[in-house]
Image 1 (spheres, one colour):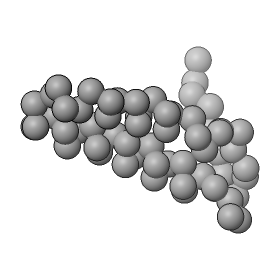
Image 2 (cartoon, one colour; image 1 turned 135 degrees about the horizontal axis):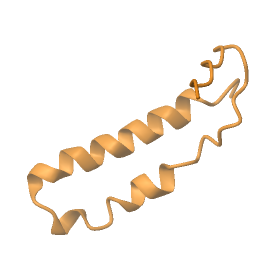
Image 3 (cartoon, one colour; image 1 turned 45 degrees about the vertical axis):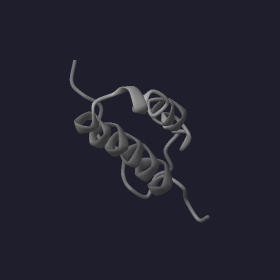
Length: 60
């Protein structure tokens, strides 16, 4: 089955901008128990989720 065509940038998407943010932020809960080298990956994941959420907000 072929993949669906990408949506045009000017068409609204049915994606909740808050989707994924709670999970990403919850991944920081046990940060103090992880080695320091793993902190960057966790912070990067949260940053990515926040960036996606902010970029999906229209006319705010």
